[in-house]
Length: 107
Image (cartoon, rainbow, N blue to C red):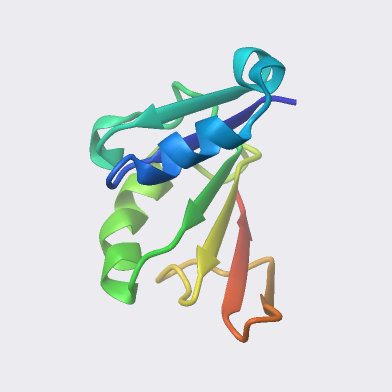
C-alpha cells in the first residue's frame, strides 16, 4: 500500500511528519510533498486519500479541482473535516470524539 501525504500550506506539517516517520517508511511507502494543490495533478501521484482541513469556502473552491483529478470510480477517498464538500454525497459521516463532524467520500 502506498501512502502519500501532501502539505499545501506552510510545510510545517510535512516537516513534522517526516521527522516522526521511521526512515524505512519514508523511503519505501510515504512521499511528502510541499506544493500548491492547484499545481499538482493528483492523478499523476495516484493519491488514495485526500484530507481536507478547510473552511467551507475552501471546500467549494477545491471541488472542481478534486472532481477533475479524482473522478468517480478512481478508488480515492476524500475526508472532509468540519464541513461537507458542496455537491458531493458522503458515503459516511460521523462526529469525532472531539465533536467535529467528518465526511467520507469514496470516488
